[in-house]
Length: 322
Image (cartoon, rainbow, N blue to C red; front, side, top):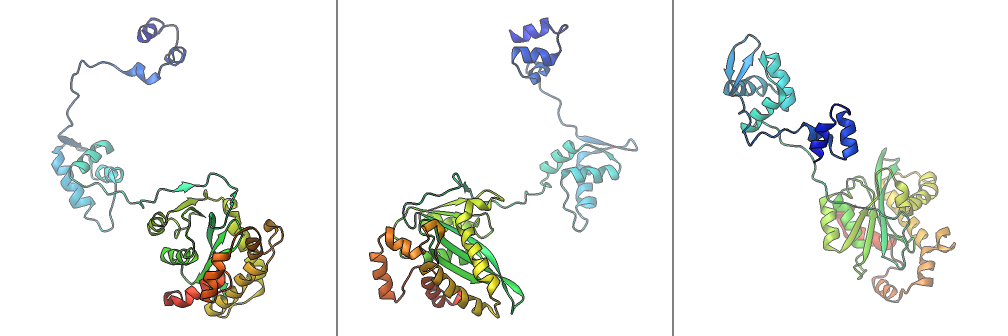
C-alpha cells in the first residue's frame, strides 16, 4: 500500500518527503525485485593497465611473490590493492579482499581479549559493615637512593577507612596484587565483598578476574578518567602524599617499606579521619562493629591490628615480596 502511494505521488514530492510522511525507510525505495534471479558470478580474470587480461590465480601469485615476500610487509587488503595498482593491475579492494580470503592471505586480527567488566553504577558507596566494600589502587613512590619509582598498592575498607593491606615493589604485576589481596582477606569469612578499582593493567588481568570469581568477590571498575569514583583510596593517597612522600627521602626500597609500615600502623590506630567523625579507623571499628573474633585471632598471632602490620608479617613470610 505504501509503495503504491509513493509511486502515485512521486512526481509531486521528493523521495525523502514521501518516506517521512509514510514513516518508511528511504532505503526501501531503492529495492527492486529480481524474481529470484541469481546475481553475476565473480570475475575470474583481471585486466592490466596495458590491456592484458590475466587470471586471478596469477594475481594471487603476484601478491605472494611480489608483495608479501618483502621483509616486514604485513599489509591488509586495502594496502595490497594499492601495491597491485602500482604493479599495473586494474583492481578494486573488494576483489582483492575476496581473493585474499579465498587463499588464506588475510591477516589475523590483533588485539587483547579483555575481561567482561562490571562498571561502577553509583559513585558514592554506602557500606554498612567492614569488608562489604573495599577499594584498591596503585601510587608511584619515588625512591631517591635508586632514582626510580616504586609501586605502592593499597587496599582500604570503605566502612572503616582501615588499610587492610599494602605492598611496595619496584614492579607490580597482577600476581603481586592477588597475593596482597589474599593476605588482606585471609581472616574474613563473609563472601559478600565488592572490590572497586580503576582500569590499570594489573586490575584488568585475566588472573585477577579468575581469583575474584573463585573467591566470590564482585569486581567493579571505575569509568575511564574518573578518579572521583574511587575517591576513598584517592583520599588515602592524598594523606600519604602530604604526610610521607613530601616529608621523607627514601635511601632504598627497604627504607621506604619500614617508613610505610610505621605510617599505616599510625593511620589505622591513631590518625583521625573526618569521614569517621574525627575518629581513627580502629577506634571507629571498635565503636560500631564487633572485633571480638578478630582480636582473638590477632592476639594468638601476636598482631595488634589488621592492616599494615598484619600485611608486613605476610611480606616477611613470602620472600618473593622483598
